[in-house]
Length: 339
Ligand SMILES: Cc1cc2nc3c(=O)[nH]c(=O)nc-3n(C[C@H](O)[C@H](O)[C@H](O)COP(=O)(O)OP(=O)(O)OC[C@H]3O[C@@H](n4cnc5c(N)ncnc54)[C@H](O)[C@@H]3O)c2cc1C
Image (tube, rainbow, N blue to C red; front, side, top):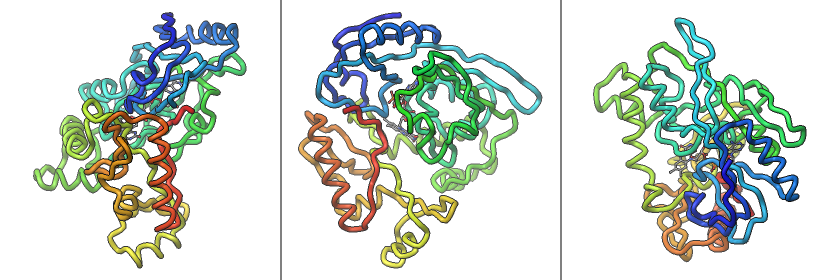
């Protein structure tokens, strides 16, 4: 394992914000997490697992902690029949490299999740999702190291408590390190995507049964048009979750605002567009002292110039207050804010 000291945490967040981290340890074998745990206990410091930092923002202070980053890289076939393949994938594998690998080998289940930044280890944390797919639908189990007991074990899908951008892991940040994720992918041809932007894309192209490669290409093209390039404009993707409200409230809102985009979320609930709410408050493109609401996607906050955590918190307060005052809806942040 490689121990780095006093690291600049802004280099480990796509938002390019953050103070310093006392220790950052990179491991190339998943079992080394035990050694990192021993190291942290010896120093009496808390441990925090990080992936590529595309959904994490650190506050400006010095963080007296041990950060651990998996740099493991295996994709292992554990079972195969004529319809399915099961895989055990290391936490350190780049998410989009895995999707590219699956698509190139003809395995479906994650193609609509193309071009989402991040790592395999982080994918179950907020149950990543896009264009009608969620990672929970391809996960068999998550293999974790539990800090409290010092044991490795597999948590089967049904016990991961997956829901929209949530899981048992997100509810218990710091309890587990994800070491590997078990996936089950299909060898069958992919179903025609039903998500609006994608089906429109294929309708325009007059493609009836798009291949996995075509779906991946379409998702990448659409995402490039809609989302800012984090390398040029530092951001963590959607900054707020799309609020899930009761059907009654959604009905009331739709009467007043017929153009409000909404989706059935099941269980008597409706998911409404957070970006639309922010835009309707007149905040699209608005700059908050260097932190800006993106001018194409109002759900994304961008670190335009010299943003820091204090400025970010101020922007969050102002945006959530405006939405609360106008719609009586509480916006929830999506990235992990490490204060
Ligand atoms: C431009 C852009 C677009 C995005 N689009 C989407 C999208 O369409 N859909 C979507 O769902 N998300 C999206 N995201 C968010 C982000 O890509 C995902 O949440 C991704 O899974 C984060 O991966 P990461 O490795 O960067 O995680 P990090 O940001 O490093 O960590 C995220 C969380 O996971 C935890 N974690 C990371 N690795 C481990 C581990 N091994 N064990 C335990 N905990 C761990 C961290 O503690 C933290 O709580 C987007 C982000 C950006 C910047």
